[in-house]
Amino acid sequence: MRNIVKHDGTIVVDAWQVLEHPAEGDSLALPEGPCLVPAELWLAGREHFVGNEQVGLWLDSHEEPELIADHIHQLPLIAVNFPKFSDGRGYSSARLLRERFGYRGELRAIGDVLLDQLQFMKRCGFDSYALRPDKDISKAPRCLNFFSNAYQAATDNDEPLFRRRGEFPVAATA
Image (cartoon, rainbow, N blue to C red):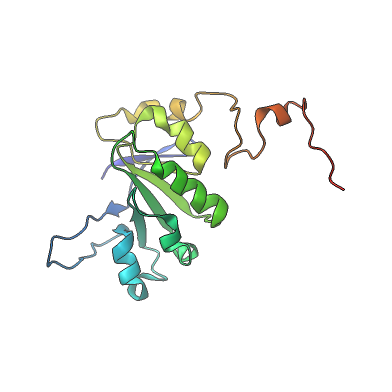
């Protein structure tokens, strides 16, 4: 089993197995223990998966979170795949899952996840990270909190820095 990084910087053993799409003509075989099923397959067989705390799903970068919006509160874990580090669609997916759809379970970044992305992923709502295998996971805790302040509002703080500093108070509405 490989290790993952949690949002607080702890490194833990990853009990969740990511299942790939089965080959043409094959059916999905669930392993023993927790697993993440491709979103389209979870949706196709959701009557078998709902209520099973051992089955979560993963969204590929081209899949919109709206696909699973009606079911997110039935999922113990949702992972978002980053097929390559330069594909930023997963950041938007995380924000939508947290802010628009209210997902409060574990949200994990998988795929081509690099150390320099961790703090930005955390700000978008991810709370666990499966680093690319060739990256040094022992550096991850520092990377999660590399900057002490962020200018923009995000899921971790809904006020921009200028409002937090008190220079531009919010005007009262009538």
